[in-house]
Amino acid sequence: MRTAKLGRTTVPVTALGFGAAPIGNLYRPVPDADAHAAVRAAWDAGVRYFDTAPHYGLGLSERRLGAVLAEHPRDEFTVSTKVGRLLTEYDGGGDDLADGFAVPATHRRVWDFSADGVRRSLESSLDRLGLDRVDVVLLHDPDNHWAEAAGKGFPALAELRDQGVVGAIGVGMNQWQLPARFIRETDIDVVMLAGRYTLLEQPAAAEFLPLCLERNVSVLAAGVFNSGLLSRHEIPVNAKYNYAEAPPELVDRARAVAAVCERHGVTLPQAAIQFAFGHPAVASVVIGARTGEQMRQNAELVANPVPPELWAELRERELLAADVSGPGEQA
Image (cartoon, rainbow, N blue to C red; front, side):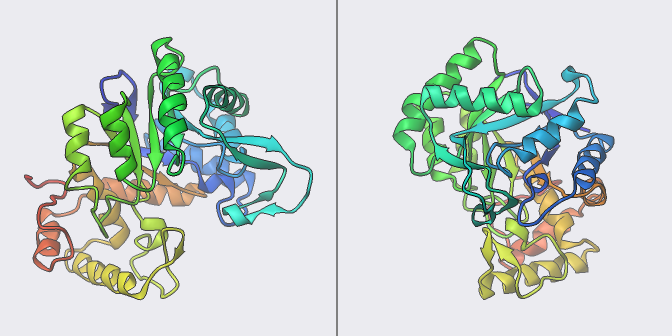
């Protein structure tokens, strides 16, 4: 599988990355055996980049991912995790479904982008992963914490990068505006951009992605299904968008895109995964899976090429921005 280096670093990522949020029991329980099979299927498909976070299942994602990666030599894979939410012990009972994860509420999340919080979070992640190092550390969702994240969290990560403790640093967010500010005002290597450059919508295309190219900052494209709206060729009325019920107008738009895909012998999720590969700033497309079968299907969607004529027709029908190119086209 094709690999790329992140920004100016030597950290490699495969074109397809494994997103480990689903194996943290995102929305519903996932048996250990299924979660482990999903990671193993990713490895068998050639994936060597794996992304996780303490937020995902209150550490369950990190523990499950680490358990499988322990089967392989450490130098053969790249791992990213995130900082900004410290997990503190909680004995009040209940579950974590309010935050989207079907796990017991054994811990609470505490926002902390301080230098000490960054170091404590990373140390705890290494313990859960069972690793002596991670390759990439991302400031996770600092939407309402710019001052602390940029003024304290980033310098702490930059120091760890300078010391060789981590290879690359950046931010992971569901918007493009604040990551653009990080690029302009700090020295990050990478942005994990969720849901803002997809087949459904490309708000990051005009300003953000060109900025990434100009500053040599790599993009990890996540959320390419827009939280589920593009994950099935036949789109149900209760499809999800941005972790909530999709507005009817977006359901209609996604169905119109699916109809064009069908005319070109392509499924909607196949086109959704491959679309993000069309921009040169994108180093990896990160896809989650709950089971081995889901991961094998994702890998097949990447392996089967999409005809460039599909992107052209989507632009003609104003279902794709006029200045956006897909894989196989010239910008």
